[in-house]
Every structure is written in structure tokens, then in C-alpha cells.
Amino acid sequence: MAKTKHILVFIDWYLPGFKAGGPIRSVANLVGRLPFHFWIITSRYDHLSSEPYPDIPPGEWLERRPNEHIMYLERGAMNPALMNKIWMEQPFEHVYFNSLFSREFTLRPLAYFRRKGMMKKVILAPRGMLKSGALSVKAPKKKLFLFISRKLGWFKGLTWHATNETEATEIRSFFGNDVRVRVAPNLSQMPDQQHSAPPKKKGVLDLVTVARVSAEKNILGGIEYIAKLEGVEKVNWVIYGTLNENHYASSCRKAAKSIPFLHLTFAGEIAPVHIPEILSRHHFFYLPTLGENYGHAIAESLICGTPVIISDKTPWQDLKESGAGWSLPLDGNAFVEALHFCADMDDDEYKVWQISAQKRGMRIADDPDTISANLKLFSRRK
Image (tube, rainbow, N blue to C red):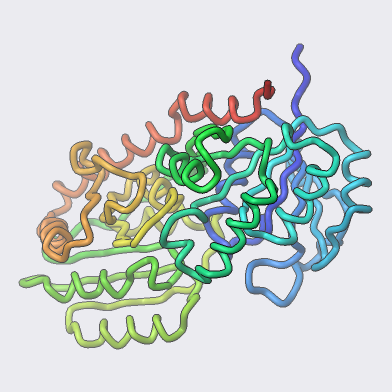
């Protein structure tokens, strides 16, 4: 019988945290779907939180599931002595980093493995941080970091985890064509139970979004598309997510108030466990985003049977052909046309799209090629 692999994971924020969004869910789904033992080292604080998680002691291994142990650290606790202690406790086959720029949970521990000559054990997921949109934030600092890291060979010898071919190309463009890159799409979790959306009324749009409220998600653009609708009785749009930029949220509220048939609600942050139920209780997932490396909420929406209306700046393409929704260019006409089509649906028409969306979602969740690619990610290096 083959020995179960032990994987050491470093991630800035992890469960029960949720404010950092997709990266947490990416690792949680990896742990939930693969037959390995995961040992996760993370912060004792959620993203942007000043208070630690209640009733969670720092610096101890805590068992969340039989295959999942988590150590929560105080800020600044990562050091060589701790790394030595962890490495001596358990022989890990692989070490997985879930960030490119994190000082505490990538650069410091990575330096330890580099000094020990163990880079062949290391896997690093940049999680979309090499996309042009992500690099445009604090651009000079990030460009300098990338230049220095290449020059000094900080990432030499490790394996890069790309979630799609586009990200693989981005990695090679920064670190060279000879680097080792493995493509393994993100895994999705199945909902524990199914919920039903209310009947779809002709002339009414019920939209939901699960995303950070920021310019990158193009919420303001989404409002502008809605403003161009004609002959629509009512549009309800509920957005769940962190208000990252208060001035941007204020601009969105102001724009929405000028549209008499639009009722926009910022419902605040939501824990991942509640997302499937929320998605299922609305008719369409709406996100005219400027770019997504993956988009867990998009996948979860399809799995729940909620058709999506999104931009074409995500990996989710060919949605209309499968009756699962729309993947559209950031062109007002394309979005307005799709929104009109959705508003005009009655309940019988909507149910056809709902069933098709769920079929597409189930294919995503149960894709054997995706599972296989993630298993190969942790196969032995030559």
C-alpha cells in the first residue's frame, strides 16, 4: 500500500478566515479533494483584521480534519528556529507556497529551503499575481522585486503551479522558458445541499455578486450597463464582499441612485460556507470583472445552477454555447443585450438555463482531468 504524502503549506490567511477570498478557497478545496495529509502554516489573523481568531492558540498544530493540521502564527513569528522545528517534526514530501510576494509566508520560509538545498520539493502558486492588472498595483515596487528575484535566483529549482495555460505563459515570460511549470486548474467544492431560487418573473432581474467591491471587479461598469436597460420593471442587485475601497463603493451607490428601477445592496462579507445558499437564491451571477485568474464564485454559481453574466476576462468561456450564461467583452452593448435577454425570461425559460448551468457546473466539479492534474502537481520531481 502506497504511503500517504505529507504536504507542508504556507498561506497568508486560511480558514476560518475568508476575507482574502479566492486564495483561501483554492487551498481549502485542494485539501478537501486530494488524498494527502496537509500541514498548513498561516496567520492567526484574517485579512485586514486587527483581532486574532477567538479560541485558537498560536504556534500549535490543530487538527481540523483527519488529513488537515493547521498552525496559526502571531505576526513576525516566522523564523529559522521555527522552520527547523517544523521540519524535524514531520518528513514532508512537498512544500507548497500560495503567494509570490508574501514576505512572511513565502519569502522567509522559501529562503530556508533554498539554504538547505531543498528547492526540488517546493511548489509555488503565484495566484494571478503576474497578471498585468495585479502588477499595476504598486508597480515600481513589484517590478523591482521581480528583477532582483530573477537576478539572485530566489525561485530557481522550484516548480511553478499555474492554474491555466495563460498563467503558465505569464510565469515563463518573467522567469524564463526553461523553468518547470505544471498546469493544474483550481478544484471546486460540491455544495452540501441544493437550494431553489424563487420563480423568475418576466421584466424583473435578480442579480447576485460575490466579490470584493473594488475597481478591478468593475461594479461601477456593471451599474452603467444596467442604466442602459429599457422597459425593465425592476433590477435587484445584491453584492456580497469586502468594501476594499470606500470611495469606490460611494461612487457605485451614487450611480445606482440615479437609476429608478435599480435597487443595489452591499450586503457585506460572507463566510464561504454560506455562499452556495446565497448563490442559489438569486437568478443570475453578475460580474463584469476586469480580470480573474480563476473566479471561485463563478464556478460555485454554476455548480449551484445559477447562470452567470460575466466578462470574457476570466477562464470561463463558451458559456452561452452550453446554456450556462454569458462571457462577454467589456462592451456596453454586449452586456446590455444579455441583461435584456435575462430580464425578458419567464420562469419556464429560466429553468432551462438553470439546468444547463448546473450541468456545466457538475462537469467542472467532477472533471477527472482536473483531479489528475492536481495529483500530478505533487508527483515526484526528476
